[in-house]
Length: 248
Length: 295
Figure 1 (cartoon, rainbow over the protein chains, first blue to last red):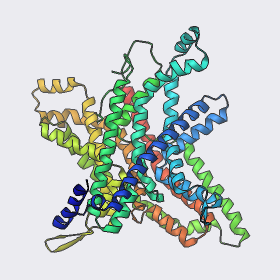
Figure 2 (figure 1 turned 60 degrees about the horizontal axis):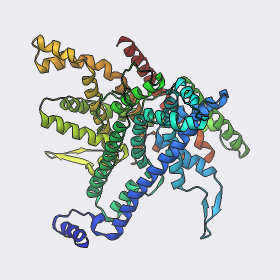
Figure 3 (figure 1 turned 90 degrees about the horizontal axis):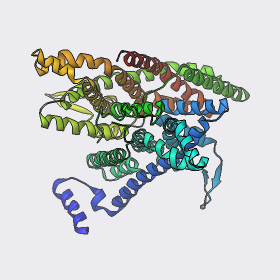
Figure 4 (figure 1 turned 90 degrees about the vertical axis):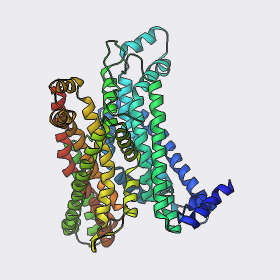
């Protein structure tokens, strides 16, 4: 393995193609960490946005008019503003209002770090789309199906778990899939508030070793492969989960 | 990878699911072709933003009055010409980016329906590549890899930051326009092709005189939506240091160094974007409705 990495040092000496992320163990570890940070950020935001979507869809079915209006306002606000502005708003406007606490080195720092704000803002961004998606998915299941389940002795909870949600999920999947792909692409914006994801780490590396073209090409390819793979896997899954007699 | 015009929804006589599900699937398949979510701007959004700006300005005014500082509206008024100028710069970037992206994207989209397999495959790969890359990464790519000036036959052609940013933004637009064109061509019923063929139209004539004119009507709503999204995405150029409205706002705020001005100023910028994008979004929606009725 080490020989393989050292080959890139030879490549640099011979051709000037400087891939420090391969032959330099420090840069390599940084890049790997950046890559996993991007994945980690995507996964956490995915999980939280699904939770936000479920809670929002549930609140939208509330009998109180103002609860529904507030949820609607939230959806409209986050759908129609650039995610970068949302992130700046969370980090700079709300972040400056947060109380500060002393950390283990005795330095005052905000309770929520840039990591937390990136997760919060991206989750709310993706969650706004999820609320609408889940709402439509649940509404798509007819009342008669629920009644049929009831007549078979299902409780209300079990009807939801075994009948309504599986059907709703299959209807939601294509739209959710679009949203997930969009979310992974949007994680790059966390760069703007200095979260060490792939773009930020790449920037650090090219500032240190002045190898902008190599890093830039690597970054572009890495994202295209990551997103392309995701799209491929999700499309396969989507096709497998297609409702018979419903989609063409 | 995702194919445009791939029908995610269908019609069935089985009483399986209710209309919201059908609507959701139709939206998902539309977003798949568009590549970007559809904006849903309403007039009350603008009213809410304006109310927030005014409330924040009033709150800041009260705070400033206690410390005997000049009024918030005076401060805002002083900087409005600069901010509006910055915003016009954003519009210029979006116009240019959309123009370049549409020109290249149309060619790429037509190449995607070529009869020659290598051309088809090549343009498909290019389209998917730029569709899957995040906008910010493409912007960085153009910012850092293009030279700041070109030398053509002894002449030095300057290549400033904002031109590079425009090119960076036009790449994803190109890929999305390409998919929109391909989706629109594929949505034209095959009867049109066959009828043209029976009238002895060549393939080129069929495309130029029969298919593409019908496509324009279908492409217009997603194209306008893409333009509105691009306009909002021009603020990304502030991350790479182009002096557009976001950058200017940040500089103004640091020059004033009054934290209470933060919300009124950013709110004002948001309002500028709303006033520009709202008519576009309304018009897109109207065109789409008209199109649905006619089909």
